[in-house]
Length: 203
Image (cartoon, rainbow, N blue to C red; front, side):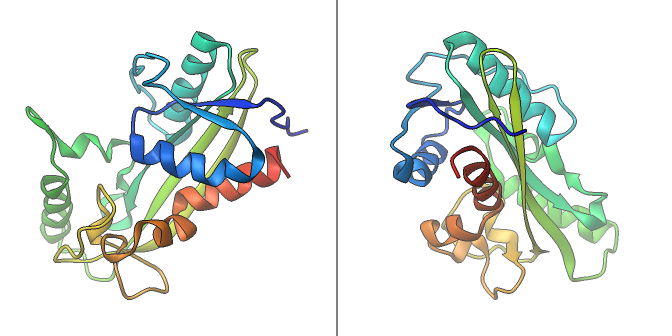
């Protein structure tokens, strides 16, 4: 049976301010104080998993153990079918450079590999998000979310982050990069996972 969330404080195991705001906004109706990993001075654990759920578990359990609070974490990325579902859990790694993350570089690499493979369009893809809510006693609940779509080229839009300018969600003629941030948040892979999380733990 799913364990409900019954506390009044939830630690979100992320150092990403945008993600923290997004989660706080989604949880506003439930009178839960949302704390971020940065304000608790938590280090970022090494993500050694090969699946989204493994990395989300690593982050959520590390944060719950360190603080004694229930902790929510997510791991997300893009899977491109013609690239054997790469980059997947290595989505952010493809953007790593010596001077920080460069997602234009990562998107260009994605496109170059599609051309190299002579993959025919449409280049079907999906954004995946797996949420894990972990308690200090070691229990956790897992909520996967998906947004199907396709990779497009050239890049379009300067909204969002990551690979958003080359991802066109199914049923839309704009990329995530061209969508208003809050509009995107209503239909995204993270929104899908959150809907399951809220229905299960707060519903």
